[in-house]
Length: 337
Image (cartoon, rainbow, N blue to C red; front, top):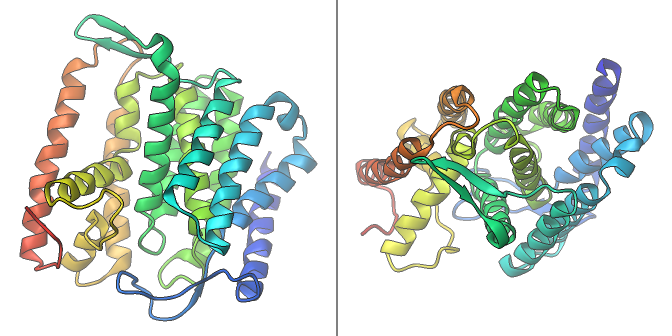
C-alpha cells in the first residue's frame, strides 16, 4: 500500500504541473474579482489531477475496486464531470444539483443511504421512504458547503484532510477497507495538492475539486454511520457545515438569496481579524475542526443523541451572533439584519 500511495502522490504532482502549463489553453484560469484574495490570474481545475491520479492508481493497483463498487464509482465520476464543466464553461447551480442528485441516487444502489437518525430521547427515528430525499438533501447540502468554503488558499484541502483523517480512523478501527482506501487515496492526493495550493497558491482546485471532495466526504460519512451515531457527523464536518448555515441565516434575514455570493464567510472574517494573514486563518480553522473532530470521535453508536443535537443547533445561533459581532468589529461590508 505504501508504494501505491507514493506513486499516487507523485502522479498528482505530475498532473498539477501539466494543468498549470496548459490552463490557459484549456480556459481554466481564475481571474481576480472583488471577492478574490489573489491579484493575478491563477490556474484552476486541480480536481482533474485528483480524479485522474486516483483513477489511474486504482486501475494499476486495485482494479477490482471498480467491479466491487461500480455505482459509487459512476456517481463520483458524474459529480466530477459537472465540476469540470463548470471550471471550463461555467454552469448554473441547478445543473450542479441535478448531477449531485443523480449521483446520490446511484449511491443508494450500493446501499449507501441514510436509513435512520438513531436514538433521540429514547425514540428510534427511522426514515422509511424519506430515506432517499433526506440522503439527497444531506449530500447536496454538504457538497455545496465544501464548495462555499473554498475561498482561501489551502483551506478546503486542509479541512478535507482532517475530515478524511477522521474517517480513516473510523474505517481502520472497524476494519472497513472501503473507508480506509478511499480516505487514504484522497488524503494522499490532497497532500500533493497542498504543495501548490498553500498560500500563495499557484493553482486552485476549482469546482472539479471542491464538488468532488464534498461528494466523496458525504459518501464516506454515510458509510461511517454503520459505526458511529449520525450526530457525530455534525462534529466531524463542523466547520463547513457551521459556515454554510450561518451564512444562509444571515442572507435570509437580510432578505437576500441563499445563492448570493459575498465575502463574509467565517474565513473572510477571520482573515480580516488576522490582518489579512491567510496561513493564520487557515491554521485557526483547521485547529477548530480538529477540536470538533475529537468530540465527534468520542460519541458511540446507539447513544441518545437528543441533547447533543439540540446543543449543536443552539451552537449555530450562538455562532451567528458571534459572527455578526465580528463583522461589525472588523467593519466588513456585509448586509446585516
